[in-house]
Length: 74
Image 1 (cartoon, rainbow, N blue to C red):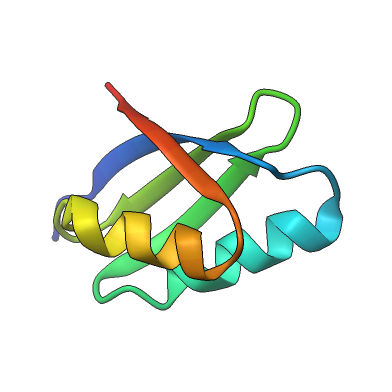
Image 2: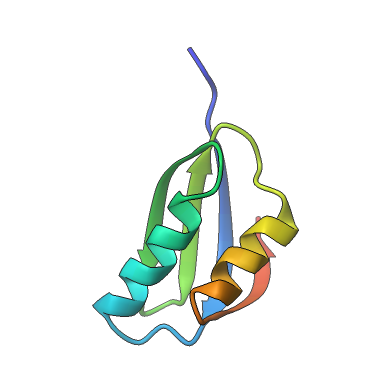
């Protein structure tokens, strides 16, 4: 059985379901990502993946979706 790594990020600029879909699609496309959950009200995105995604890849994916990654959270 493979272990799953969970990482949480603070993402600014999301305001609707379309925003959630855009961020989810962008992060889901990263290698090894199994699941993306967005908490719109808290502006938090949780990524469950095989390994911790590289910070620059996460930032680039969020930027390309049109949003701002402000921090990773433990």
